[in-house]
Image (cartoon, rainbow, N blue to C red; front, side, top):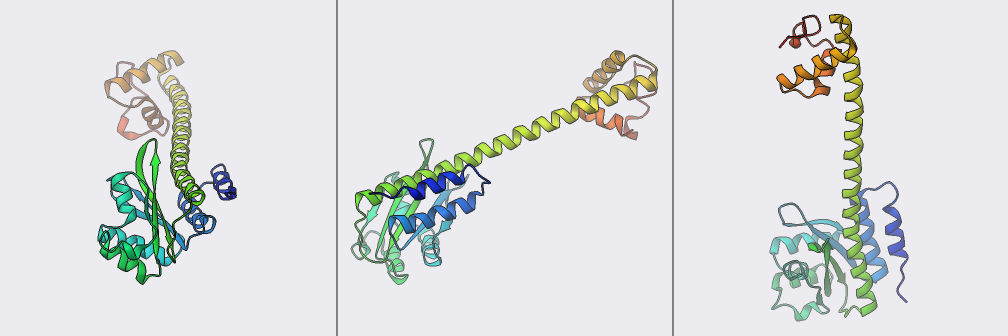
Length: 241
């Protein structure tokens, strides 16, 4: 029976304090341990659409991943180009397909390699690589678990995006609240300085902001701190420009 504990642990980390790089590192460690391979690595595409190494379970896997990118050949590159899983249960038989990669993999102690696609919202964004020290067919239950882990990598990216959106909303809300407080203070400053009512001060404030193409909150903050660049806005008559 497939051990689902790695998936449970990884998904649990998504609801706590979330570090995306640490999450990816845990994911490849789980792939190494629970799928039962010698090592695992994760390649993802950046904004330019170029694959980049982001995590590996050990140094040999990291170096092989980097070499794979430099040589522009290997199972993950084929997976990236086709969008389909790539299985190479015996790399000694893959010399014609990936001559440089197969040689480098053997030099680093790997005899088999498999790559599974990572998709985000139906879009291919990278691949999860599995490396074995001896020929390995990767039975279907292990393959299914590995693909599930690849899918969880995409979920991690979605969670990071959600957190960023939430942080942006929180920041925008704080900014709006601060701007509103500044506006109320600026209305008081204008009303006192010009000996007018608060409503008239509000009209003056909005009119000046509109005529000078200024954000209302920014203008209010400058009035409150008595920005000298505004001249004597808070002392002249309401027809000031």
